[in-house]
Image 1 (cartoon, rainbow, N blue to C red):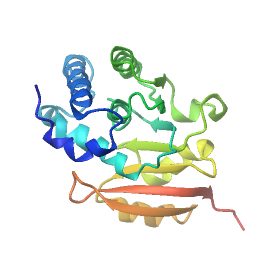
Image 2 (cartoon, rainbow, N blue to C red):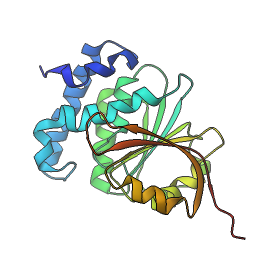
Image 3 (cartoon, rainbow, N blue to C red):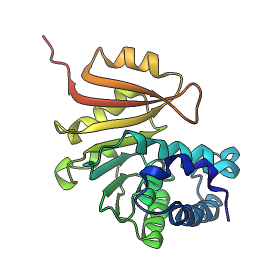
Length: 215
């Protein structure tokens, strides 16, 4: 059995006992290692540190959720972070997750994890700009981890945004420069939360996102 100390600080936000969440994450980790042999899901140097580098890093999003956040969209899901650990932690709470990932093999992996762990997860095997926002539940929360620059992300997220939508985005040390560039094109409110797992990283919570009007 794995050491659950890396995820224990977030257990207060889980919808079920730490041991149950940990067991599902162990199954996820086993599938990750199995599929990594044929598809690069995470960087190889982080695979042996999956509990802190990937699981805990994903689960810190739980601190920023509201009780009434029910619908989630994850953009560029890749190996499933942060969406699948969140879905595992919140399993049984009827939260619904839509994962958007264009790579066919990664789509197969994500669907396999969701099926084997009984998660309320749908996987869209297309690019974000190919997904019609009318085909997905209006999200309370949009998540994304290590995909693209903030200005690019805002363009991808905009079609899905409703007045109640918040985006919770993992960002590294480049977040200051990206925010400075983004405010020239987009209006939004932002809250910065220091990352628990990356000394130079933050979680950016964006709300009221809209494109600036051209005068």
